[in-house]
Length: 302
Ligand SMILES: Nc1nc2c(ncn2[C@@H]2O[C@H](COP(=O)(O)OP(=O)(O)OP(=O)(O)O)[C@@H](O)[C@H]2O)c(=O)[nH]1
Ligand SMILES: [Mg+2]
Image (cartoon, rainbow, N blue to C red; front, side):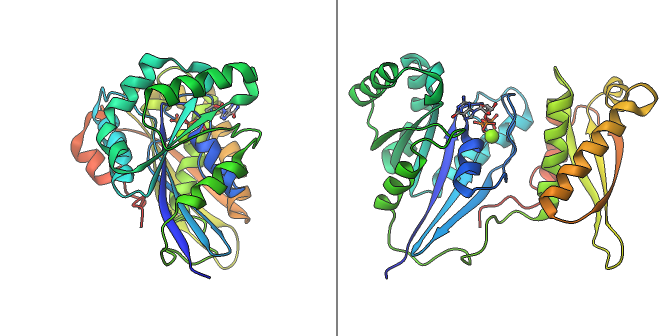
């Protein structure tokens, strides 16, 4: 049978449910999800292979107007993913749909949308009435050039099979880009750093999760005994160090325990995790730091 395959970036506003959708399609939590916007920072490849079909999904950070350098780097992840795509999935949180904000977002990528197939995925339909879903579909189809509009619930998995069937209809004939059993092109190190960041997003509030960069300094697989992982939690101000550490080290201890358990679940083997807290002043605006570190663990698409 002729093989069909293509690149399908998943883009949309922060918190729309892009990573949830990718995880549901793959049946594995490869992209971290939290209730906080700006959870995803890098593009993350998730490869769906079935029979003669391979869809290379690329989860991306939420679309925003960059206010600091880290956000510029995050925005470039979206641009490069969109450039290399066959079909673009624009995910919209239907509960927040509003014509004007959709139009602003649409205009930002208008050129890319005009030169690619565009699907609008209306997510979170589990939380609103059917009549309201139809109203949004009507508004979008009357006012924007969109190839397909597909309502889903990524969290519950409603209608995701229909989304997959429709993507497959549009896929070009192509050889596969990856071996059939490969799920992602990011290395284990990247996922380890993301799991620690996810636990920081869960345990800390305000600016802390957004001020943190996780560096995996050592990752040693050991034939006998547990793997050894040492990671630095890099903050941007001295005062944030004490917050991460907590009274008598209580906070960092909890962070270490929760992260270790989640890393062990992900890797399927026991690990020894050591965490250090370091400060790199204002790293979010430090071009050199970001150039060196932002894509350190290899998040390029191929
Ligand atoms: N009710 C409901 N909640 C959802 C659905 N999909 C995602 N969510 C929730 O929405 C929140 C954000 O989900 P994410 O998948 O992290 O969203 P994202 O678009 O990847 O966000 P960023 O990475 O920050 O851009 C989480 O709390 C999810 O559980 C859905 O279909 N229904
Ligand atoms: Mg995300």
